[in-house]
Length: 144
Image (cartoon, rainbow, N blue to C red):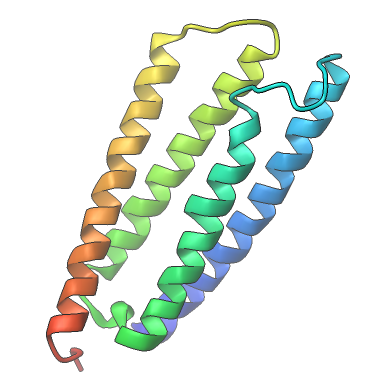
């Protein structure tokens, strides 16, 4: 499982890097085409940093942790991987939706807010599972 875990993490890291950089480009182009001044604070502007931090950097950190404490050997690793990534993608998706809607003016959408909240809850569950796995790996011998 360990080799598969590292491959999944590496692919996720690359995908989040591409998505994060693409989100920065999307923000720049959409605000420019909408005639908004450079640097105007919009929800869409934080999509870039969310994807790079929660996606790229977090996946890269977990990849390094796997090399050190063998997280991929833990039974809960697939649960962490899929739950965490679902949370990141749902949260980032709702940031994107809210940001695009906000290009036309202030937006107050309970549906978008609710889905974003669900994304954050799923993301939090993934982080808790990660800490359980890290704790198991630090306090116990790796499973063979």
